[in-house]
Length: 284
Length: 284
Image (tube, rainbow over all chains, first blue to last red; front, side):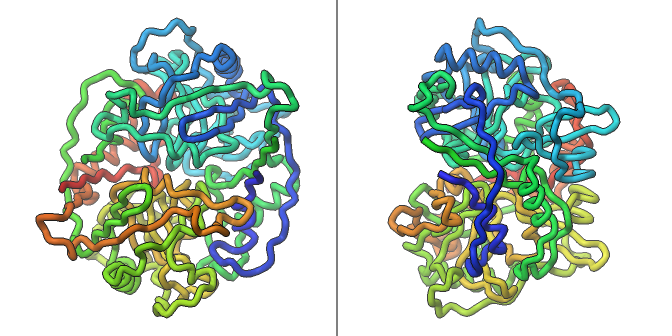
């Protein structure tokens, strides 16, 4: 399956079906199988990419939990439409858990070896937004920090008031980017395939803050597997567009400066980092 | 069903389940039954509110099409995850249609009688964003115009290159706000209830720009009904939080200035107009 629909949309103008489709020829990066996790839900399969650069401790523990089959059979017990789908063992709600707590991994230092593709200066929430290895990120220029932004499809650890209370429960962002959470959560992964499946996760009761009182009606994690634990010939490979490539820079440029006659009112030359499509494809 | 989950989330801090729940006591506005449409999909029921202030001609024609049962049985033939779910008779793709074309209704003049609740000055895409009767909107101060912004849950007319080529096909926004479409489309309604249902609409093939080649696998509109055409004692009433009320101003203030100890890093005092929860409730 190749996901470049938005690129085509871009080339065609927006809703206009006319015109010829120019094939996009992006540079692809294969996702490291050690960072690739397959999540089988009742609703279908979701593929996520872990990000050890931004959240090394969280990723190491999550990987181990996946390998221990910790998440298999657990449910999405708090799901708020337009906001988050949260799953795990419920330790975030006070359920007893023996899994160690992880410290805050909210931001990292921006260093020269990090390829940051600028998307927008003076974004509403940060000095600069950009992309780092396909992940939406933002920078504070004064204190030279860099963090992953809360865009739809982001995966992060739930926690209590303590910044160091991350454990097993995680959430998918399923609505308009809640950017006010940026620099406050351990963002450690993003959905590479299957966001439509994530969107089918059953919502909890709205007057109970999305928390299911009856566990039997919630969506369930059937199984999680780390790609590198599956024999190579049996596993899916995932590729994500190289967001530091020239082709991708070109895509950003054309989205920033829309020349199609479809646009009666020319949009401002700005980009929302959470609204830039990151093409991906998987092969079996 | 009362939808004030986000308000509770706000009062509790973000993911922290502790603390006491202070009941929100918003002022409600009943949606005019002439502007209330029930859309029965294969996936469940969606309730939308029409907006004749911003798109009078589009609303008048849509209302008539609903009353004529025009949409009953039609499908969502173009669905792109994270972007839009487009349904109708396919006239936007060139199918013959006898329904009249509607002119552009992209923006209106800002006048004193319009209650505009300011959300954010110098939003990335506009001079000001705000809310008008529960709808997210934006303003251009130089030319004194006002328009509805493309937030998740917005309903707008699809069109071809001509700004005046609006007809029957419409789309729901189902992902991160595509604000670059603002002032370019006839936005005429928004989802009041059932956004989770909208999110279950079946996605089209990604390498076909979301267009189903096989009509049998797409999601279908079973029926649309205008509330005012249903006897009062049989119909659902819908209420939306009064976004020009003091209580709502208070909600905006507390979201802008987050004091909860949960926020280890205090978020910038800004608001994304598409990420402000608009509470609604329905009664039967």
